[in-house]
Image (cartoon, rainbow, N blue to C red; front, side):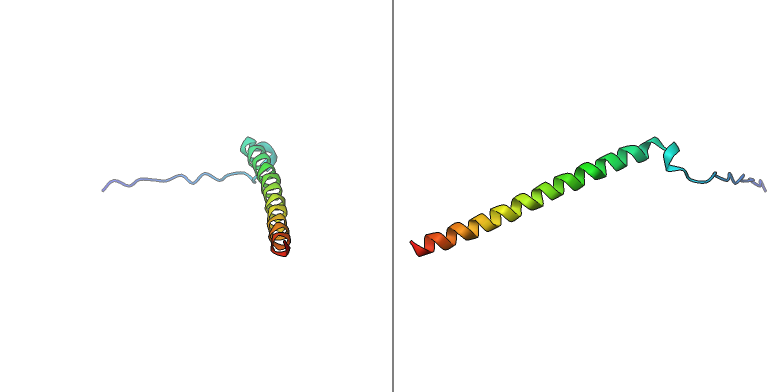
Length: 60
């Protein structure tokens, strides 16, 4: 019977400063937050505008 020996490699402590993909993810998350905030504000303004014009048109 052949025995296969596995060697367990221990990783060092995690450091996001040494991992270049972390900077990419942080940049992407920041852009998505700005985009979502802009879209949320835009939809709120449009919703209020639609309500406002519908109300005023009803008065005419």
